[in-house]
Image (cartoon, rainbow, N blue to C red; front, side, top):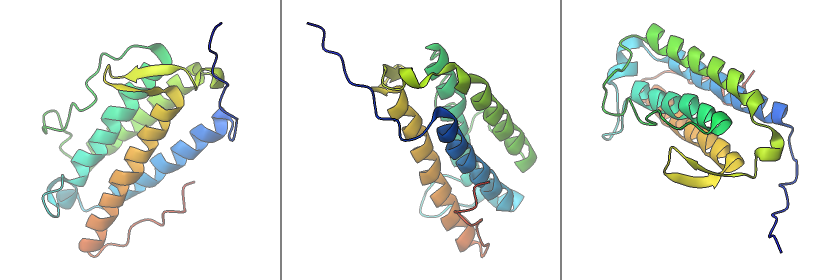
Length: 167
């Protein structure tokens, strides 16, 4: 007898989940915009990475991650920019990369049907989960790092964007 796992109860439609994620992406983009250029790339507290590096970690997970979830191809390095290699040099470059990643999310998302959300996946060949748990991890990672950005902005005397404004 085959052991079949019952599908996850639908709390949100796929479209609503994408809209939720895009709301977070828009808020993180506004957080990037709030930084003075120099501080985006140089300011840190307590040995944490700069917000530019944190933002690129989000890019490195989201872009290749959504492609991997949609196609099963996990060839890209999920932490390509952690070392600082290949980092954008300006806020404008970072925002362009951010927007390209958002477009990539829009492109690959429709290829992931809700029926596949419970499918097992080994993201980047390393992380076991389901498609849905991996999507939620990508979102959680973004929220976590945006929180670090909020701490940086406050330390710089800058009011961060309101977290509830995600449109």
